[in-house]
Image (cartoon, rainbow, N blue to C red; front, side, top):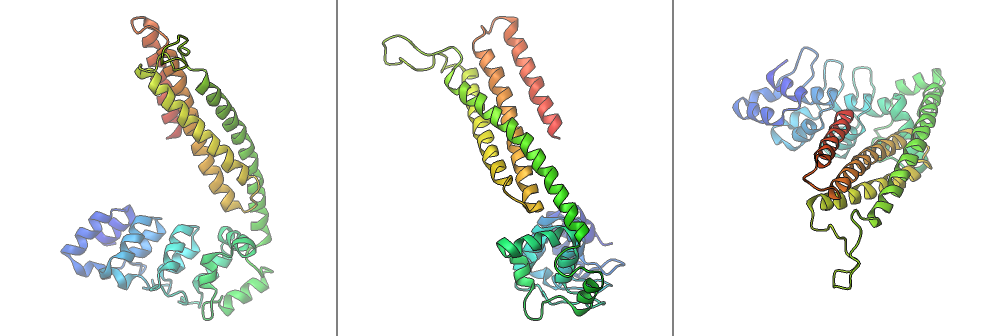
Length: 312
């Protein structure tokens, strides 16, 4: 494995560029399996390296190069579950979508045989008409005869096996149960932060001056932190509820997984914002000279560190 392969495996684009500048011949290097740096980048899910290679004219020869088994980078991407890389490759006009390996398999064969991508393909045909399959499933780019016969012999005409479909159905059911818990948590956070936005710490000005109705502690730094944190918590929790509502209507596992991840991240941010808002609100109404003020700061820092540690 060459230095260029190692840099591609680690995702170090700057190192790759330096190697190419110093030794242009490194562009043609392959390992003992015939894999070039683009193969290695795809195998290790280095999206930044894939983009770099596609945008680097000196590496054009890697785009359709085959390894010892005849698999091009698109074959390798289609055999994996990395749809982002597949999308980039099929959108590139230089990529040969009709390439066959040594056993006459095309990239679309791997798409159809992959349990996870097969489910994605199945849902896309019925609702979204997947761009990936649409570009691969063209005259000359259809599934190979060998692959079609294999699927017929194993009762797998279509996009997926029954077992894979059942697995995705059960996983979708579990994800929806998780969504139900997340939407409850996000709804509670949205309710609490919405109410806190109107019950300002310290109250409002009651005199007849021009500041009547304004927050009394608006000039304090801790109050400003409270307002910012409470706003972030409310907005993130509200968006999380909205995303999870749409996710509950979705049946495709991959889209449902994406909804769940995004909603979980937003719920995490909103819960952290709520904790910061609570701590800063308490600190705003306590005299800074008392020990309680310091205890409040320490507890808030510990809470924030616990959130960050839990996320990592």
